[in-house]
Amino acid sequence: MTALSPGLSPESATRTAGPGRNAVRRFAGALHRRPRLRLAALLTAPLLWLVLAYLGSLAALFLSAFWSTDAFTSEVVRIWTSQNFEELVGSPVYRTVALRTIGVALAVTALCAVIAFPLAFYTARVAHPRRRPLFVVALLMPLWAGYLVKVYAWRLILSEGGPLDWALRPLGLSGPGYGLTATVLVLTYLWLPYMVLPIHTALAQLPDNLLNASADLGARTWRTFVSVVLPLVWPAVAAGSVFTFSLSLGDYITVQIVGGKTQLIGNLVYSNVTLNLPLAAALGTVPVAVIVLYLLAVRRSGALRSL
Image 1 (cartoon, rainbow, N blue to C red):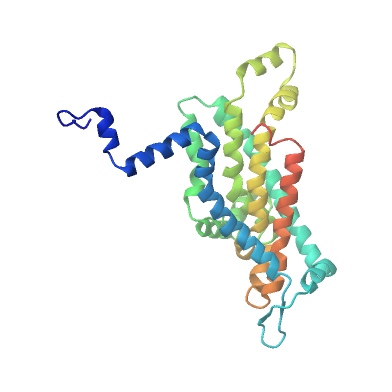
Image 2 (image 1 turned 90 degrees about the vertical axis):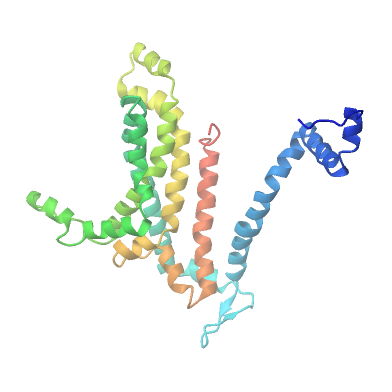
């Protein structure tokens, strides 16, 4: 606390403190009295960045999709046309690739949910409380490795004569090799932690008395899971599915490394960026539209209300 000069009262010290300090105190008092103003001051900068960097780039992407490309020079011609979207809708190749991409994203999401449930249940409800943090860290450790390192490791595992072939050969089986199956397997491995973590959190917060009450009323394990556990954990599954679905929908590097001749939307966007930028922009709007529809469907189902 600053010592006052002899004969100088606290009121006089406040008056002589300077206009800058008084202005700061008035501003702080205004923020304290007006919670909405305080919230607006906190959110203005991130919202401004969101509008300029994210929504602005999406708007530029959508606008450039209505341009065309000079067939001789491959330069972008800024003349409005709907030719790119007409080609997307009318071409069976693009429709097939779009449906294949959505199918891969749904398959990855379903596999992640099926695998994540027993893992999360063990770490949240079965494992010793002292060991639970260690199991959670072990499940999240794949996120610490580089993306390309993990994908190329899987390329080695799935290669002909690789470790998977060597393990399955005594059983008279062989690995899937490179292709659509390999793409789904690798994407499931990559995005599984994003599904495990929210389900683990939801199961850890599940009240024990509900499970005990279900058992006391004679419900078997499957009945308890369907009627008690799943409705309470479903919002966490929906939250995890948003990550797994959106990340799988826009991925293209994994398909290039382990997908063989498989083509997804991301590959078409990547291959057309330098050759036909407006067409690549039109292709890029497809995942955005699908993700928006997916979010609306999840929100309409009511799964996100209790998150």
